[in-house]
Image 1 (cartoon, helix red, strand yellow):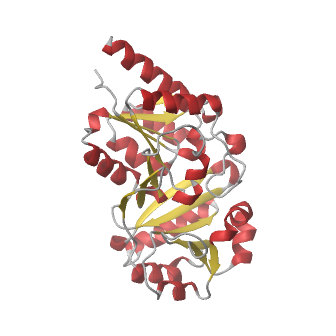
Image 2 (cartoon, rainbow, N blue to C red; image 1 turned 120 degrees about the horizontal axis):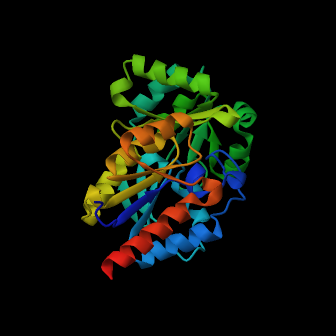
Length: 302
């Protein structure tokens, strides 16, 4: 018998956002949470459930999609795959960094594999740093166009890591095969113990993102820390996701939910681990799960 859910962590791309408007973190600006999903998020909050977003997006690329939906200002946003946690209203909760010396070493290792970007936790230009805008535009044009105001070009990229302040994460983007090879290269290098690799894949587009995180950092790590801060047990926690970077939080939460649009390998993993399966993101599967949850818990209280 499941314990009542007090905390729900929800991924964005491929989970809360529909495919037609799914930015895959690297895409379009004109994205929107579905009306039914927005109502379900508000209903869960009204029922006393803490609703948290857990995304690979950085805060500035996540919060605008939630603004204006009538959600609580203290809603937690786990962003950059767990490196930064803030409220929707902008209050800091948690943050960690990737050491600059490690990031600098990774430049030489990963430059041949794809477009390399480092993210800093600072507003405006310089929040995103890369060294070849033309290469980035060729591979991830929509992302470049959506984030031009935050991008700074530094050549070589190592120079951006000499100044004050460590990045919160790195990111390499490219084809599925190249990013799998990049992950193997990191794991075989001397820097493996200083860097966590978190992979996200979109097979239909032959697009993959390899996030370079501080050691041990993931959505699951951040969710565990958030739950502890709120005094919520893992048995009272649900996580909903669709991709490889969601697996850690689905494993940590006692009640995992895999989206119906997830890759077959992930849906097979979900069945083996006893996770529920939601309808697809295009069917507003998050709304379906939250509606059932609110109804079930309301009935239990009565």
